Image (cartoon, rainbow, N blue to C red; front, side):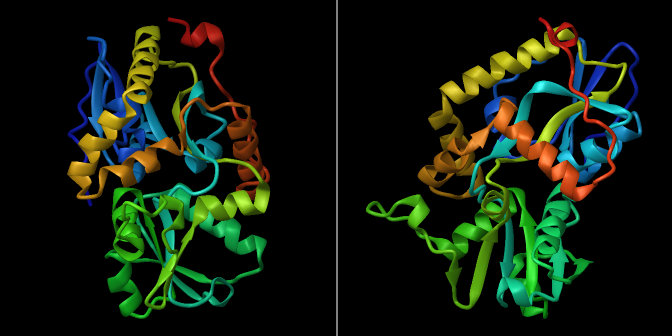
Length: 292
C-alpha cells in the first residue's frame, strides 16, 4: 500500500489531503496551492481517516464516508468525481456468473467501492462473503476467490490487460468484458443500469465549521478549467505513467463529471438512501463559504 506523506500540524496552514489517482488528474495536475495551504497525499482509506481525525482539513474522500459522517462533514457544492455509465477503474473481476458469487476478495483502499458492491449485491438478493485480501485480480482468482474487487489505476491497468489491445480500427467501448473465463463487471455501469443515475465516487469534504479558504477553492476551479481544457495533454502524461495507450486514458478521463451537477447529486442521494437509510442530511457549502 502507498504510504501517506507525513502529516504534521502547522496551525497557520490549511491542510489539504489529496487522493491523487489518475481520475482526479484534470483537477490536481494544474493546481497551484496558495501559500496558506499544505498538500498531503495518500490512498482513500488513509485520507478518509486523516480527515475524520483532524489531521487534514479537507480531502477528496470516498462518498460513503461523507454519508456516514454527514453530521460532522460538509462538501464543496461543485466538485465531484462522478461518472454516468462505465468508469473502467472500479471493477469486479469474477470467474463465476454474478448471481453465483459466494466469496469475493476486497481491496483495502476504498470503502466507497465496497459499499457500492454491497448495495448492488443486495439489490439482487446475492449473499456473498466479502473478505479482505491483497493482490492483483488474476492471482486472487487463482487462489480460489469467485470475484475480486479492484479500484483505481491498478483496476484500469488490469482491465486493459484482459480486454486489450485497443487497435486503430476498434472503439474503446467495443473492447470485451470477458476473456479466458474471467468477466469484468464495471460497478458504475451496473449502478447506472439499476438506477439510471450517475454514480458519485468522491466529494471534496471538510469538517463543518472549518471551510477551506476562498483562495484554495478558486485555485481548484482554475485548475479544473485548465485540466479539462488540456485533457489530451493530461492523458498523454498519465498514459506514460500507467503504461497504457494514450487513447485509453483519454477516453477514461472523458467519462468523468467533476462539477457535482444535479444528476450527480440525485445519484448521490439515492446511493446514500440505499447504503445507509437513516443517514443524517447531507450538507454542502454555501456560496458565501466558497466565494473567491
